[in-house]
Image (cartoon, rainbow, N blue to C red):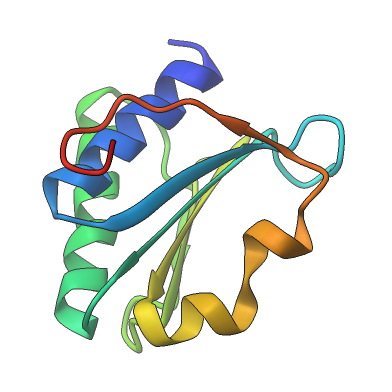
Length: 118
């Protein structure tokens, strides 16, 4: 499974938990820290945790290593590190504050196939 397929799989896991505004950024030309960022948000702490858990379980089912998960307890900004792909799951109040899409505005968006989000 290539990185683009993994990003899609993670996006589907987010969508399964009704994550909102799921965006994938191709970071290959703009950052050394990851090839892709997947960004989404949930409306409360429980949903943010459910989205993060969904990504972790989905990756483990595919034998993809989840290197670490940070911020899970507070559930304001959970980072799921998949190596070349970093998933950012925000609480809706934090997402606009950090605005990663604008911060990494040079990165191109990756088209995703997700259910209710487009």
